Structures are given as C-alpha cells and as structure tokens.
Image (cartoon, rainbow, N blue to C red; front, side, top):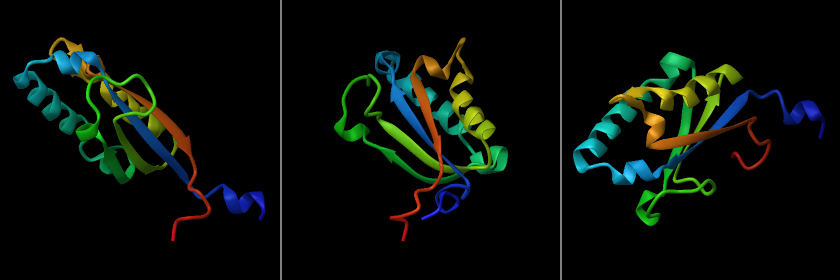
Length: 121
C-alpha cells in the first residue's frame, strides 16, 4: 500500500469533552442553562464551519463526577474542511456565559487526523 492511499482523504477531528467540577457544583437551574448554552453554541456546525458530524458518544450514565483527562466523558467525531475548523469548534467552549465562559464547566481537547483506510465498510 502506498502512502497516498493512506492519507489525503480529507481531515477528521475527534472533539474530546471533559466535565469539570464547577458543572457538578452548579444548581439544577444553572445546569439547564448550561445545557441550553451548549446546544446554542454547537448548533449548525456544518453551516457555520463546514464541520460534518459523523457521530457522538456520551457515557455520562456510567461515569460519575468530574473527569481528569482520558477517558473523556463525551466525544464528537466529524469530517472537517481544514485545521482552522477544528480550532473554531474547540473555541466554542470560550463562549461567554453568565460573566464567565462555558469552559468554566467543561474542557475540550481535539485530535485531528484522517480517515482510517480500513474498517469503514
């Protein structure tokens, strides 16, 4: 297999989301507000940044308390048009929220690569 068979098939990003302790300290009404702010911040990723979400994963039902890096609690896998789009999505957690930013409640690390050449069919 040649190198050009392995790469050059577009970029893919894995957005890895961790919940911070401040989220668990928040009152129920604030948690609902955080959820609404997240839905708004992450709405229409394809229209805004050309980011096509391929799938999401959330294991919050079997994980309790704040995370501390890997394994993260939630993931978004997406095709991205360029590296800048991954930066734009990562920056969504810097959205202002009640005198702070959403990254007070969660953090994100982003991995950028390309589609794997096997296991896709």
